[in-house]
Image (tube, rainbow, N blue to C red; front, side, top):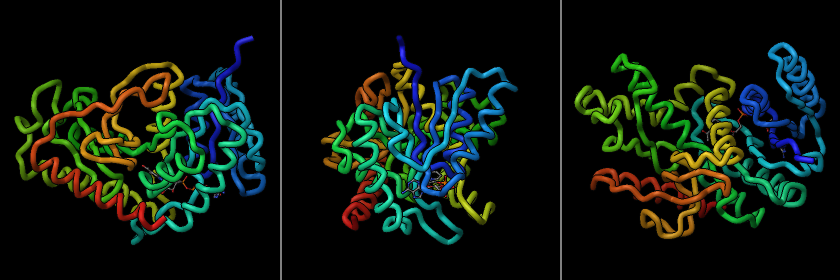
Length: 308
Ligand code: A3D
């Protein structure tokens, strides 16, 4: 009998809850919500299971405090950790979140050894690196979600500025998920037409600065947490590419072995994502300025990795 897909949320906080909701709405399979907080994942699961009949979704969802219940998961999406508070950088989270990633990584290795792991916990590129080390999984099966979200932010601001449909905007944000991320202007177009034809260089500088600070802008507005709907949607897109072998070209934090001059680090690069997880890292020609920015971003990630 063909098995139903199982998607495990490792961490059932703000992002975890939306991940389970979107798993149902996008018809990806069944969801299990795992968290250390007693009763909370069970409560979220019960609530979501009452949403399924409203939308006629053939979707089962359960909540647990026992990581053994993720057994057989096809995809594990990891948000366990603490989010930023106003005034904190993503790197300030490293000590607490590294311990949490080590502990859940052991659980994933034991109970879902064949799963694809998508890490969302910050500091993102460093936590993806640590997750791969702890699980020992093939690096193709451990990816970090950041580029899809950062690119979505870029596209959203550009579409608003140009007053065009969001679907016309194609863009890439590469590098580490932090203040040094690199919106790649040379590949940013409105239906193939370079974005510089529509927006002045000064306005583009301002928009790109806003992209780099967009996570912080949301933290300052929310005051008690960070963005959660769009990060969840971005990880679900990645899970979809894997489960449906879509072979979509998207930016993700991936283990580089010489690509872009980076060796032995996770960094945001364009990848083809399909049924093997990372199918291939695509090397695109960058301008000298973009190369310089990317190198700076890589050094920022490398210095946080050295703190592990
Ligand atoms: P939050 O709502 O606090 O959820 C985190 C959950 O992790 C909480 O429910 C905790 O109880 C749980 N948790 C802690 N320790 C463990 C453990 N050992 N095992 C299982 N669960 C545990 O945060 P959130 O969902 O808003 O954010 C989660 C993470 O995502 C944070 O590190 C954020 O910084 C990060 N984040 C990343 C992005 C990216 O674009 C990469 C965007 C937004 C947030």
